[in-house]
Image (cartoon, rainbow, N blue to C red; front, side, top):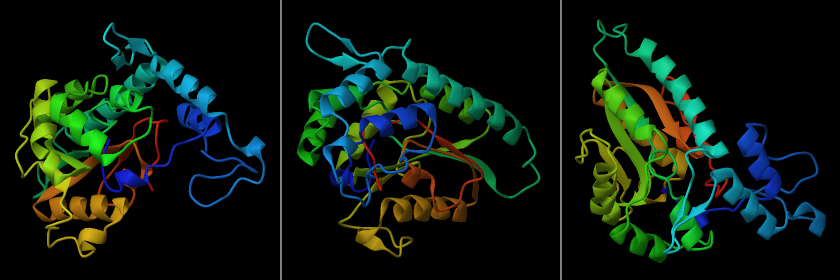
Length: 265
C-alpha cells in the first residue's frame, strides 16, 4: 500500500470508514481520532466485527474456493475508483495536451503502490487486517496483488500521452524485485527500472533526503517528488491512498484514492 512506517498503520473505526467512503471529514465532533485521542467511553469505539463487515461490503468481498478474497468490479469501491479515474483522465487530457511543449520540464505523474496501483485487499483479509512486516514479505514474495480497478489502463494511457511515470512507495528496498514483478504481471506497461520506481531504503537513504533514515511518510514522499522535479520533470499529478502520500507539495494536482482499511500518518 506500503510504504513508510507500515508498522505504524492505524486501523479505522466504522465512522471513519463511512467518512472515507463518502468523502467527508474523517473524524467528527466528540469522536476519538486515530492520531491523538483516547476514547472516554466504549461508545466512541465502533465494534470491530461490524467495521470489518462494512469494509467487506464496500469492496464487494468475493471468496474463491481456496479462501482467497477479491474485490468485486461491481462494488461501491470499484465505482468510487472509476469516478476518481474519470476526473484524473479529464484533467490529464488537458495537462498533457501540449501546453507544456514550450517548457523545459517534461510532464510526469507519481503514484503510490499499495491501494493506489496495487490492491492489498486479499492480503489484508488473509492476515485479518493485522499487518506485520514478516507477513507482507511472505505475501509479496509469492503472490501478485490485483491492480486497483482501471489504474493500469489509466497509467498506460497517460504514458502514451507523453507523461513520464514514477512509482513512489514506502515498501522496503528488499521488496523491489517482487514489486516490479507484480506491476509487470498485472499490466503496467511502463518503465519499471530504478529510475522510475522509488522504494524506501533505510539502510542507504539517498542524499537528496535530508531526513535520511528517519523520514516521515510525508517527508519521504515530498522529498522524492522534489528530487524528481530536480531531474527536469514537472509532476502534473500525484496519486495516493493516504494524505501523507499527497502532502508536502511538488505536484500540480493530487488525486486521493479510497482506502478504509488502514491509516498512515
